[in-house]
Image (cartoon, rainbow, N blue to C red):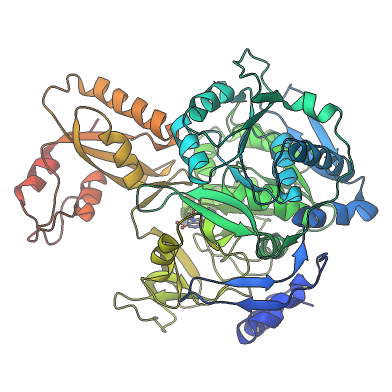
Amino acid sequence: MWLNIKSFDEYKEVYKNSVEDPEKFWEEYAGTFYWRKHWDKTHSGSFEEGNVKWFEGGKLNIVENCLDRHLDTMGNKTAFIFEPNHPDSFRRTISYRQLHEDVCRFANVLEEKGITKGDRVAIYMAMTPELAIATLACARIGAVHSIVFAGFSAQSLAERIRDCDAKMLITNDGLRRGDKHVPLKDISDEALESCPTVEKVIVCQRTNRDISWVEGRDEWWHMLIRNASKKHEAVEMDAEDPLFILYTSGSTGKPKGQVHTCGGYMIYTSYSLRNVFQIEEEDVYWCTADAGWITGHSYIIYGPLLNGVSGIIFEGTPTYPDPGRFWEVCEKYEVTHFYTAPTAIRALMKEDIEYVDKYDLSSLKVLGTVGEPINEEAWHWYDEEIGNGECPIVDTWWQTETGGIMISPLAGITPTKPGYATLPLPGIQPALMDDEGNEIKDTEAQGDLVIKHPWPGMTRGIWGDMERYQETYFTKYPGNYFTGDGCRRDEDGFYRITGRVDDVLNVSGHRLGTAEIENAIDEHPKVVESAVVGYPHDVKGEGVFAFAICDDGIGDPEAFKKEINDLVSKIISPIAKPDKLQITTGLPKTRSGKIMRRILRKVASGDTDDLGDTSTLLDPSVVEDIIKGKAY
Ligand code: WTA
């Protein structure tokens, strides 16, 4: 059966079947889970209507499938290995049985504090097992979790809490990443000043620093779990009930709360992990992402647990205390599957190769990348230096919206090509569209990447804004899901993602909307208007380049840039800070007032020889000024 595809011929056959009869295909996989009640209808709805559903009427709890289901056969198996920020700090392993107990305890705490099915709970935490426990406890009682990456600012956190009217916030006193300390509780306190719906805050101790305390609102995690029962009956959910909300950036200002559901997401994360990574029982799997991003949701928390895999939760950074950190951890735990972002690979390949050579990496079997296009140089370095030429590289393309990996080699099965995400997973039907909105049928082609048929892991909506959902994904190419990515297909039908075709940047694998950054920059009293574009950056993949029209008298440009960067850090996050800032007298606008970003992108990347047609600009002389200008 296709549960585990084992050869390229089998892949081709299974793929063909999945296109001919998608429902049958997904039914087979869905049947391997524990359902309290079988679903009534495998699939309904359409992209046109924006009302896709999978396994409706099926009753389940995803945590029962992650944990309870495994207790008899692998209760003592390690679920998580926790590796702290500093290698000398306390590390621990947690078995499936222990994790089940911890989740049950915390689920009881949540219920006792008045959280029930359908309530939203925001989670803003360090990368420790408690983050996973909080997440799973929410899912166990049917509360909708909304994890906010702990690098986001108070304002960003507040905006996300307000958007979904979260009733509770779970956080830490603080966190350490590398040599930095982030006062999560202080940031939370600031955020909550503008979040009236939050009734309770649960604080998990991590840094033991002094924090402020709001009596009646704040409670310590360790006090609450002390007397909580380790028995808990998981709440029955419909397959289509929301499991979580995760905010992501789009081309307009406000982040979009993607809604994923209990049944479809469960099936898709489990299926994609198993087939892409070709995981086996004794493997040790490490995804270095943060749980605040979709990669962490799907491939640190849910996917590995659903498959009964032992996974690593890593609190630190690739370069602390030194750039050998990843490889040290790989050696220490005999990691077999390693999954990271191209930006980390590019940063580490700049370091002395001794940091790699010092460690025994012979346990590695499969290497993965995600989040942004990987350049060929980084691909080869990863292959040769880390994989010793023996580990297949899975370049996995997917999105917050897709729930799981969509286009990727199956490890050791699909032939790989540097820079190519290669072929779609069975069940996924990609296509390339031309400017007129028609599907390009030629094998060799370039166009906008769309998906033609619904799949179980896809986003079911933008929280509170179904109109925007319809508009963003299903309007440009009616009948298809539009990914926002450009893509090339080669003569073998292999896909290579070329990057976003909308106003979304991908900085170190972090997705940022240009409008979001512009709005933040415009908050500066001296800024009249700004425009942000991406430019090629050798480590980050893409850097942030801001053009700003300012009132007179900005003073020292370096100092002004720092003011802008501080402002962007405060409003969004340090990850969104402009790498370059150029003060300008005007922006290239068309007569209808639209900024011609194409020109700014060329200037930002230093490619000003051929700016293309500028005749539709209101004032073409602006371009000359911009080319002559200086960036800081
Ligand atoms: C980009 C991350 C090239 C792409 C899972 C997509 C990639 C966006 C790849 C989604 C890849 C992701 N090759 N580009 N293997 N994987 N992307 O929502 O532009 O944070 O649209 O999800 O990252 O980013 P998101």
